[in-house]
View 1 (cartoon, rainbow, N blue to C red):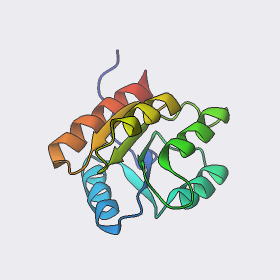
View 2 (tube, rainbow, N blue to C red; view 1 turned 135 degrees about the horizontal axis):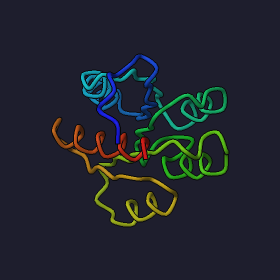
View 3 (cartoon, rainbow, N blue to C red; view 1 turned 180 degrees about the horizontal axis):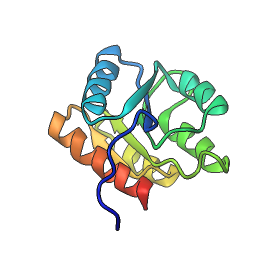
View 4 (tube, rainbow, N blue to C red; view 1 turned 90 degrees about the vertical axis):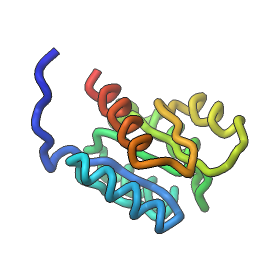
Length: 134
């Protein structure tokens, strides 16, 4: 494969979480990794952004959000040709194993339980981006 290309502002990641503190935390970590974050406060907002914009290298979605849940959002993305190539990471504080299996069934690539450390998010993000590059 080619060597690591420098991060450009073109590398945008859609982050959707209805918890403002988590949204800020994830945004800070992702931006520190050199990506541009487009934040969404819930699934409906993320859905609206995706309808008008497919220029993302990845998505990071909370599983449980008002209006449109994370897995629902991923299923929608898998039905749209311009969105299906975008890999998605799901996050949740819920301890229900069914949520992770639902997320993978919907098409999520990685699953991150909350609470998570900065390092855990960075590792998952790198896995996600590697998936996007492949």
